[in-house]
Image (cartoon, rainbow, N blue to C red; front, top):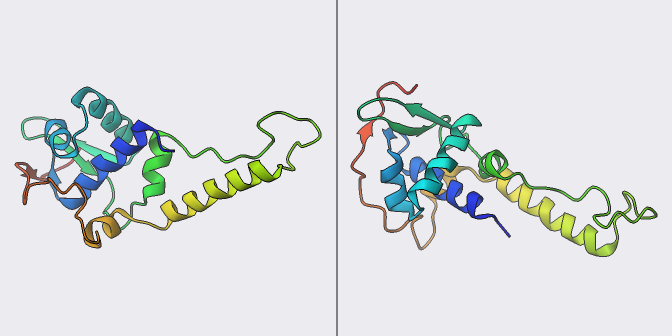
Length: 153
């Protein structure tokens, strides 16, 4: 149901939310999230272009969240990399259906609406502070080998 890009973006921002004041390199994030480095690089660049991440350049550079984990919803992350496409008109282009969706497409659109609502109402902070029986990215070290944020670009 979710694209690989969405999965990888959510893993990356979750890792950044666990240590919100630490600059993390693409390599650091890739190691913890188990995302292939070249793919992660593109995802992180996309998240940066969409204003989800900040970049700190230079030695000890890397990525940080642009907002606090309490202010960043999963919905914003998903929409930045692979927007949820609601069903507004008949996907089969049946003229008599138009905007009056059949039962199948109404149900599918409702599922998308429910997912959208769940993502809008869930922040990264909720994921990392109330993880349930398993911590997100459970192989994450107690503290990554990354530097505190000095002045993000």
